[in-house]
Image (cartoon, rainbow, N blue to C red):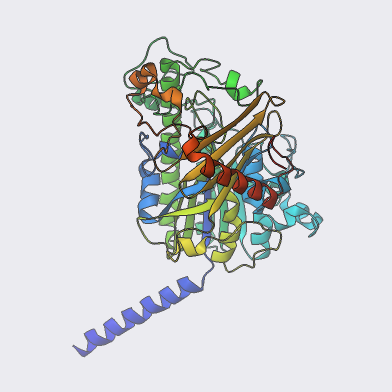
Length: 501
C-alpha cells in the first residue's frame, strides 16, 4: 500500500508540475479568417446553414459571440479596411492612408529587413505581427493575395499569399491549410518551444465560388451557373430575400451588383439558390481544412495551450434584401461570425460581446500578458471570454462610404438599430429603424408581399417592417439619430448627413 501511495504522490506531483509549466507558457494563437461569410451560414447562428462539423466543435469547446461586427468601409473592397482594423486595432477612419499596395509576384519576403526599417512613427510598428514578434512570438501568415494591410503583412516572419478560389488542392482552401500544417510539422520535428501566432486566411467563400464537384452536387448547385430551373436540393431562399432592393443604395457601378460570376444582375429564385449552394459547398471545404489543421495541432501536443479564433472579415448578402455583396449595413453584412476556444474559455458558452474585429488585437495582447499600445482604439474582451461580463460596450457603429458620399451609417443600442442613407447627391435620403430583437432579419414592407411570402415560406408579423416612418416611434428615431451623430464624432467620421449639424 505504501508503494501505491508514493506512486500516486509522484503522479500527482508530475501533473501539478505539468499544469504549472503550461500556465507559465505563453499561449499560442491561430486566427482563422474567412473571406465574405455571413454568420448565418453556421449552425451556431443559422436558420439555414451548411455542414461545418469542425467549426461546430470549436463552438462546443469554447465561446460563441452573438454580437460581433466589423466597423465598415470607405471603399467597395470592404475587406481592405476590415483587415487593416483587425491588424492594428484602430478605428475605421484612422486607417484611410495605410499602405495596401502589394509587391510583385516574384517578390522575395524578407521579414527581418522589413522589420528593421520601421519605427514607432509607422503604424505598422504597432500592428499584430510586429507587437507579437517583439514579445517573443514566431509570426506566420497564409492568406489571400490583395485587399489587406501590406504594412503589417511585410512583418510576418513567414508569409504565403495566394488568391485561392478554385476547387483543386493547389488553388483552393487546401493550399492555405497545407502551409500551416507544414509549419506545425516542422515545429514538432525541431522541437521548437517558441510561442506562435498564426494568421490563417482563406480566400473563400468570396466569389467566384468554385466548389468540389461532390459538394456542389450535395447542395444542388452547378458551377458557374446560373441554372434555368430550381434544383430542389439547393438551399432555400433566405427569409429576407428580395428580387430587388427597394431603393438605390448609392453605388451604381458596383462589381457585386453587376458582375458576380454565375449571377450578374439576376436575382431570381433559381440563381440565388444556386449561388447559396455554391457558397455552402466552399464553406464546407473550409471546414474540412480547419479540421486538418486542428488534427495536426492536437497531435503536436499544443492544442491545450492554443487559442483558436474563427471569424470573417465581414458578412455578405447573397440575395438578402435583393443584394449580392457586402456594401450595405444590414445585419447579414455588418455582423461577423466569431468563435473562440482555448485555455480558460468555458465550453459551450456564448455571449453577446458587442465587439468589433478591431478589438481582437488588444484582446490577444491581454491574453498573452503584452502591454496594449496607446495607438489601439479597440477594447480587450478578455473579461467576456472568461465569463466575467457579457459586453464591452453599449453602442455599436457601422459605416459604408465606398460609393456616393456621405453614404450609409448605422448605430445599434440594445434592441434598436438605425440605418441612415444619404447617397446619389441627395436623391436618396432615408432612415430605417428596426427592433432587431423582434425583427432580426430586418424585414421591410416588401417582404410582406404575397409573392415574396410564397417564395420564402415566411409570413412576417405586422411589426416586422421599417419603423422609421411610424409616428409611434418618432421619439425612438430622434434618440437613435442623436446617438448616431455622437458615435460619428467619437470615431472621427469625416462626413455629415443632410439633417446633422
